[in-house]
Image (tube, rainbow, N blue to C red; front, side):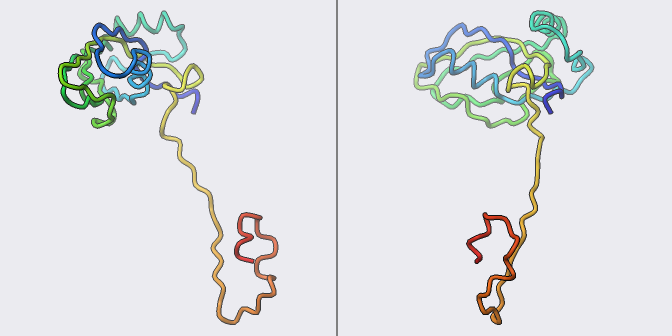
Length: 159
């Protein structure tokens, strides 16, 4: 999963932030917003240096802009991209609550890289399942414990 190329917000410029969150906290939250990309410009080599990737993004048009004034909640859907194929994977991820008269104005770039570089580029589709045995004790049980011998220690509560 660490080699799967993923699109993420990589670089932002905050021009006006009068919210309660520091610039660094906002940039971390925004960087973790999962993005989708559907369009011809979405294919980039995933092994580029950060500066080369940023330049390729500028050339490809994955530029984001954002401007909102409070009061109200800022959601991931409020982040707009110049390329209409790029958008937040989920619309209602809360970023920050803006109070009356508070503003947030920013622009930035999204890059396509791999999870080895940073957690924001880790693919979020990894899913695993573990089989757990189920043990039902019948009325004929005399409590000898033979039925639970060999079970892992986490099932010791059945003994």
